[in-house]
Length: 496
Image (cartoon, rainbow, N blue to C red; front, side, top):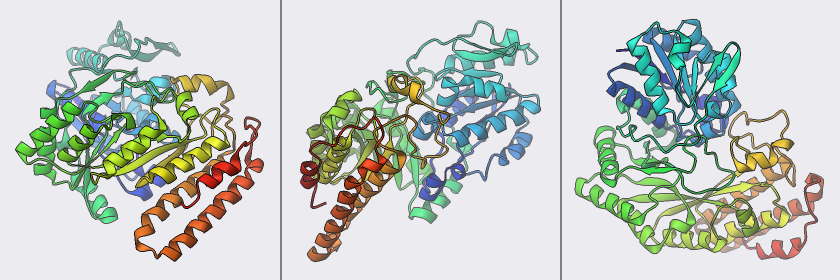
């Protein structure tokens, strides 16, 4: 039996926007790995960075755990780890250095480590898992259990899917994206978390308590900007019965008021969602939950099944109101599907949020205005707006990597800086983001406003849109084309 400390490096305090947002979720993939290693017979401790004060907290945790092995396994279900925020990489490297100084064997896994293993090896990691890395992790731990003094060369010899450093050079064997490992089916090690710290922050900031779950790993769709370093386009779904059993367990054990489903695509098959709803009804285990999904999956049957299961909110990857941009992204959805999905879900009392992406390669002013028109027509309950982020390993990254300068990572999730040469500068996209958010906020406030006040507010917002459009030339780059038909499109988007 080995003493293994499992941890991750996503410190909520290091991301100002997310700290202010105040919606911390436990690191699902990290505690899944903890459960797997514990089932293998090892003594497991956890360093949960999420609500820690900072990387300095790791020193005491490492000292108390006194592990034989440290496994930094980043949470593959947290989309911010896929973005490889620079401040989190710095924290990971600092903790790796501390563990290395104590003579501990260090294994690292995550999207950033899979894409750029050299940075983590330079910090002191002995082995970086490429992709999900379950098979490699099990083999590395097994060899250490048999011989704790095994030399490094023998320890890593012949194991595919890892990167390591040999004579100051990185040695790596990539095996390509593989399906989610079937051995990772255990219930996460929820008992290792300080759940009450999570509850306290949620209650203080929002007046309710939310936890997270995941019904699947991976995504079968092929959007060319979406990160695939862990599972590629493979998709593995848990059984509806098992998922319902875990929700029932969380409800009975921790009494959450809400569940965030961390799947890239939740449900996928309507029959699965229907079965999930039936199991929840029989166990009285349903908790209101939020999902991420695609517009083209929201049939009338799917909307009914989600309602039956207890879905309270859906977030749809709308990305753009321009069909030209959606096609360039290889998104596979049509603008009318976005509007239809919003109507179907809304008619059943399910809130709808749209993820919006600005600045994609080739996007022009008319495309941005089409996105404004989509938000106006579909009237989502909320939106999340970002600019296109070139993630290593994606087709989009390959298309723009020659344009990338020194800045290859956002510092935090509010950075919103263009890292390639889009049609406009970063400031222009930030202004568009702000106006889109105000448009949604104003629409949500409409029932509480008098008709006169609402009309005045809409007129004021339209004036600000017109002013921004009129000033677009000062934000334009050499990649922008002449804004044809701007007046026609702008007029079509009036009345909020």
